[in-house]
Image 1: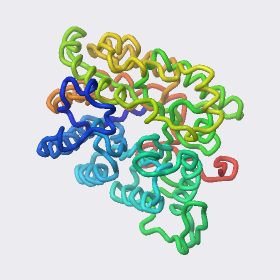
Image 2 (image 1 turned 90 degrees about the vertical axis):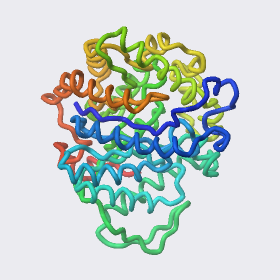
Image 3 (image 1 turned 30 degrees about the vertical axis):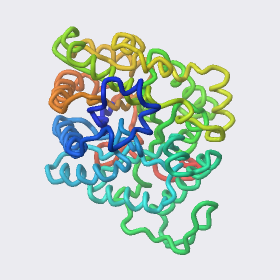
Image 4 (image 1 turned 30 degrees about the horizontal axis):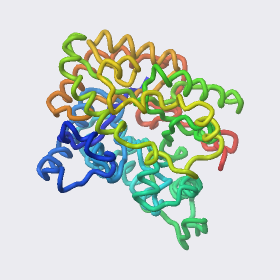
Length: 420
């Protein structure tokens, strides 16, 4: 399987009573809360942590995108990924450059996104993996002013334009609902032209997103913050059901899963080191985003609404995160914390039970200082990752990974790539 290192850029110094004083972590007052030098250090620390992971043997470096938030100060992951593309290429490190979030539901400049991603593929010489989420409501609709009812249709149109701009042999005009361009002739184009860099879409369990991934041969990402033990069966059984309904063969390498992980020499030591940082993350990050800022009326299609209204269990631990303890979060599977053996055994069971061929290991979170993050990365890479790497390799081909890094792309034929 493929194991990537998953990075966010949190402000690691919010006050202990933050969640009781402020409405959300996506409306945090900046000047009252921030020491600029600590923001500057956050970017240096995040970049250094990514390089530690790259040098430690991870298959890829994934970075998310979140605008106007104190839990992840990465409004454009391509900026950090450009630095990593150069550094890893210069050091001869064959790891994937993977901006897991470039929201196409919020962007009003899809050609800029296509150009940036093409640049990254050129800078990394064919190591780019592209993540295109639809977009969170607070970011797409509130921060960027996209009407909720337009988020999905804007995503669909923008995705088609990006793919066409990467692969068209001749310049073309584009007359879409949201974007009009007289002459599209991208410079540069991606190095990967068979047919284009791998595309992954991150979803929360909406069957329409799963259907798009399966129909159009994209990878499907799901993030495990809600607690894999509470939501895993629901989400991955649903993916299998959608695949079966479409007559598609399920391949573990088409599924990616993000898991928070904390490793120390013993279970006792792991709790002592990481508990405060686990609780910081859930109380001052995802748990501190009210539901009305994660979803707005009109921002999700009817099939997704049917699923959510019938049973809100897809959100797992979400409503309890503001007060949840470390032990409760571990029990729900929001984080896997323990010795290398404990972490390895739980991860092997998780990925084999759910058929997951790509694990995104979140090893820095919340207030965790960079020294502890680097220790976590190295311990995981040395004592856990080697037992995960061989899984599924003898049974399936990986069609959603760069060819330079061992992937086996599927040629773009009408049979293999359905258009929207």
